[in-house]
Length: 354
Image (tube, rainbow, N blue to C red; front, side, top):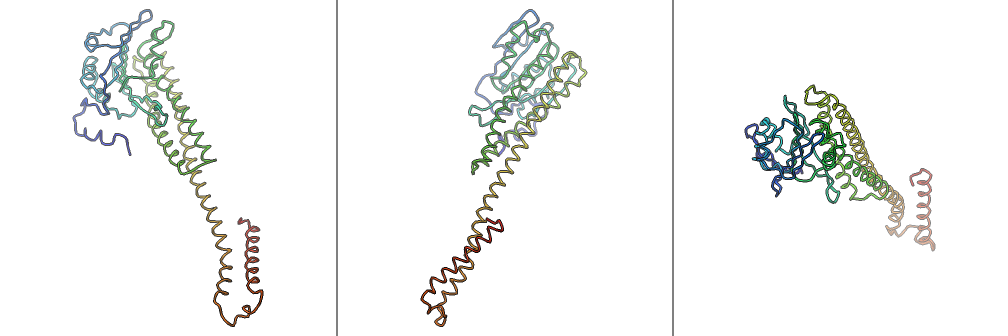
């Protein structure tokens, strides 16, 4: 059954651009963090207020605003008005069921991407929608909840020796995308280990629980595929844009990102084929085991057919049967039955039915 079934249908019929959060609302208040930096200066504010945001001057330096918690529609609306975002963009930000996408405007780019995590027990893959908007001198990222894969980027911003301090919004947006996509490799590495273990189980000690594990693995791969496949078009669109917001010397970084996405897709397709093959192998092994059992039972039944016939004939108790007067008749019949069984076994063996 699909997770979250019915949570979107209740919003059918609303006007386009309605800023209504579609997801499970976390029990937290939205938090805004802020980074300002240039080649020589740096400032970080962990809890940034909407009032400070409305007074923000974007004419100089580089600004990174990160919002944790998109369930507060009024906060998203105020930020959208401050930066003059299109109404449909704000609607997409709070609509957590979006597929990865890319939209280009005259003064900014809008991206949606899925950030993936392994669950605490490692049994499931948790996903979170991240929306990124970047324009001249600013990048704004929207996340569903606190916690992300951007700590390495924050560390690089704090240190003047890194390239990020000398580049603009397009390079920061690339760095955010790169961090999310690099985390996919961790998910795929864990998934690859599980596929290998499942493969060993199918070939060695498969049981009724194996089929359930195979289907769980298929669901994980489908989830990954839905999150990663659309990224190919997203990153490809970025490399083809002629917008001046994307500097020519940074396009090569997005091209490298495109190669990473293609590699991820190839890996996912390989895992998909492997799991499909494991399912076929498991079903074939179950069928073969059943055939072996049926072969043994058929051979036993076939051996007993003539024995049952002989026993039936001598079970009629006709008074004039000549063998009834023989002293060794009983043992002779048993001997004949044994000889028949042995001859049939030898025959089956020579025909390689055993």
